[in-house]
Length: 489
Image (tube, rainbow, N blue to C red; front, side, top):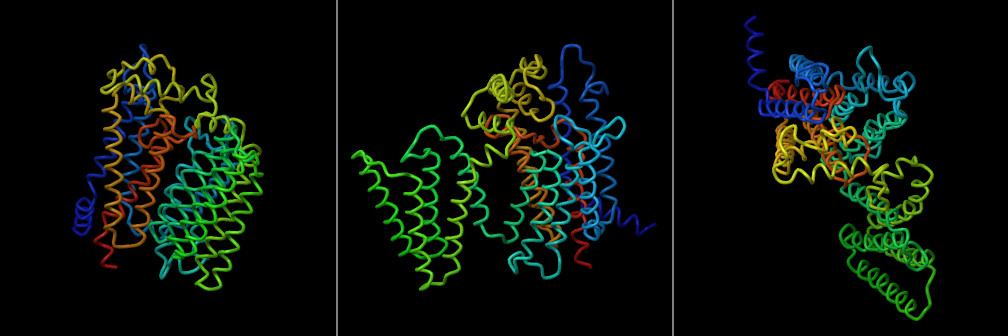
């Protein structure tokens, strides 16, 4: 009995209480925001189970209970059973594809009597545990051999593929946040640079299609120029081949000036062959250069350029033939190609009106006209942030973002003080999920990102999202609470 009391006392002392307090503040602010978002003049009390806020309070009560149970479990269980937990969730995701009812074109919700649960939300903590377990394997190093990358990517992409099969794109994309964890654990910065370039190339190609340059859309010409700039930058920075970078820069600049002069004279070169020939000759020069200097980085640069050109050719194919019409429409509206204020752009336009009308200090609690008149659909779920912006204004919105920033920085602090690789990697997984959800949800609500159905953690109505993030956070708190005990094993 005395030993159990000592262990309990040690656990209570080890719990990171600032994180628990931040979690509590966020979920309670979420309840208030849900009540405000769903309020009309006939509403009952915020505690009524007939209201979304009352239902969310029930989810919160169960979440606190689950959090307490998680803290009582031995911290070693999470590492020992990481793979079985992951396997169980993967099986659940597979089963969901076949037994879940079709809800708005998605088969991602399991209906269990009076409640519905979304397994994809619980897959987040399971994937984080499995990834942390992989990195904590004896002598595991991400860059030691290619198979290590394959193992890490398999853990990340398996749930992504299964969730995409459920036609739940937003939830699947959230798992891509784990690439930040791979970067923290040694993945080359080239991968993140490539990911950023992919987004920029896609947006540029899709957005600028009407104006023409050298007989091809301006967007495609701009991407070719960015590929040329990327080749020069990689030669100078990544390959340290400064002479080669200078020569290639002179070649690209010279051919560009010649093409411009010819266009002034009424002679317009065919754009696609011109850019392909220009880049192709530069790549041949680089392959020759690789015979005289260490070739590895030069070959990576050549391969990156070829992949970038291949991606450029695939953009229109993917956009027109792979994406669904409603997804195409959302992207067009988000990029400003089309307005469609009565269709795909309606939610975002009304959300921006609501946030803008809030001004500096907001209209006051329960006084938001956009909210009360139900102009913004789904405003108690994915668009909850617009209610905060309208009723609490810029100051209230900034305060909410500051709370999230504080929580994320606290989690990063917890990550860096972990004595084990397992604890550190898991903590960074939690931080990455939160950063991704926060950035995409807020960006979606203010019109910077396409609408893809990403909830705001702890604020958006729903038990699955709340429980999923509660499991994520409290497992981390439990692992961190016993960080001193790790030193004894």
